[in-house]
Image 1 (cartoon, rainbow, N blue to C red):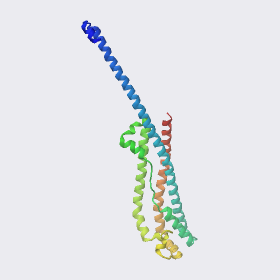
Image 2: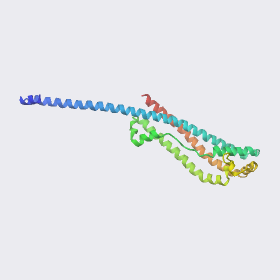
Image 3: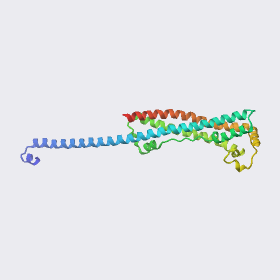
Image 4: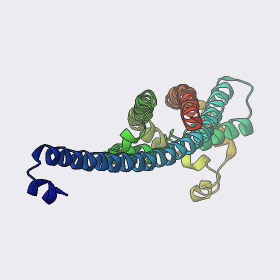
Length: 244
């Protein structure tokens, strides 16, 4: 067609034909780009959906983890309060004193541990795929949410580092492992009355140590309760996004 128009010296018609060809090519390119963009958007939406489902599952798991942690820490505080009550009571017999000490060493003297599921968010952050979460409000809330995880973990670490220098000498100097049913046999046959009198004589030391553990347990409980509320809010936001 181009050659025929040129041979007839019909330049104006040739120009129109050439422009038409260019327009068709451009339209073809635009259509191809739209199809490609549509495919990419579908892939992105699918990827976002997978990420959101993983985040939802992990945050639900975190709720259970945090509740279990709180339950353990509250059990510890219960034994701490009971040990204080028994040590301060003049009517506590030997058996009650030793039982209270055993419960404290078994539950109240343990250190809080923070554990949470962050693998999906870490994946999103490290790969740059956080942008796949198209809802900017949800994306911002996720960043804030996991920053709170780090804050709680850091707070527990600071509490542990504060307590250890007080706890270690107390544990060794008072040979508290002799109260543990699992290891008391290592100390040979022990007189229960002597053990009880040791607790009475060292009452202030034991209460001071219990107080240290009271505080490193109580603060994480408060912070975990706040984090549970925050996690429930994140779960609601993710569920709303998945429904769209």
